[in-house]
Length: 244
Image (cartoon, rainbow, N blue to C red):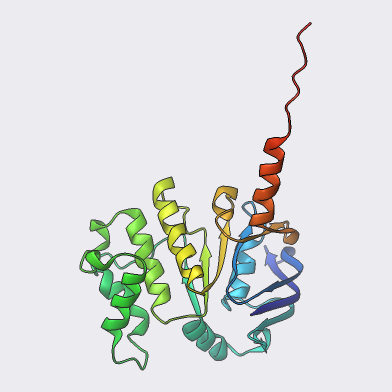
């Protein structure tokens, strides 16, 4: 589904210093995968996600989405790709405070050709387990419920790809796990998900972890292999030296 080759992204700082946020990154993601991109703050993970989400262009390199080289697309073409193929979830929920859950989810459809936007919004809210909260305003919802409304809003256009940038960053541990369980269920239903996080305990809920540092990929592992290695390590005997 996704293939990037030698992608780099640079920014000018103070009109003179060049900052290399992403450096010669190559990566392939198959349809139906659940991939976590993990790295510390400033590692380049969000910049990479912006490129994958067609929100930004690479300085150099090639990006193929569904065998189309979108790195060469015009701004209008990229906007159409984002509207029809990609859903976004961010750390901030970005919900309209005086608008209920149903109306918040309907927003991306208001300027579309759909004539059944309320039905589609209800289906999206049902998919995240909020059927009984559709008429509640954000102030009447917990943080986890607000994030689920944001996820439903990302789903309402029925995208093929869902990108989540630190989606648990503003949630307590319990609400964070609730949000992650929604992603896992969506992935089980066939959706391709890319989740950006700095936290290993969140990344390990995906099926694959891509590690990024200083704008470069420094590791790529399946979570199953990682967890199996941990199990084997836990079986090793612990030697304790006798105190003299």
